[in-house]
Image 1 (spheres, one colour):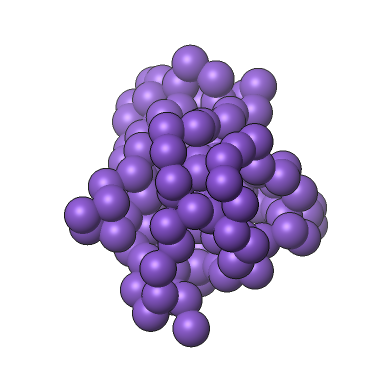
Image 2: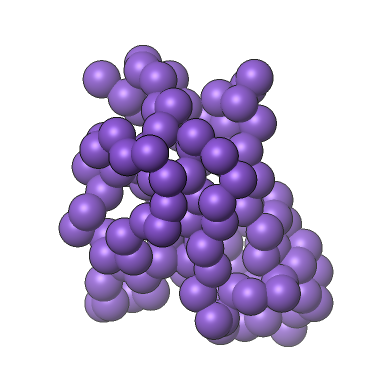
Length: 128
């Protein structure tokens, strides 16, 4: 069973940066979509950034374009989300997720319901 474990969250000031890590274990995700979602209190999870593990495909939602970057380290079985120029509106719980479907390439589905494997979530708080 694939397991995803996030790390790297915490408290940062407005304008600061954080790097979230997602360690993958228990299986191989060689041609799958995976990425990062976030959830605000009382809201559904929304996608932040996605990648396809078989190549270099990446997708970003408007809120993160130019500020967030998703990157894979295949040797380490880790997916990173670098977040720069953080805003208070980025305060949320961030989740790593993976789609168990094997597909040859992106694009990846944006909806959280498509994703089968989830990490436990990690808090990111951006304070002024």
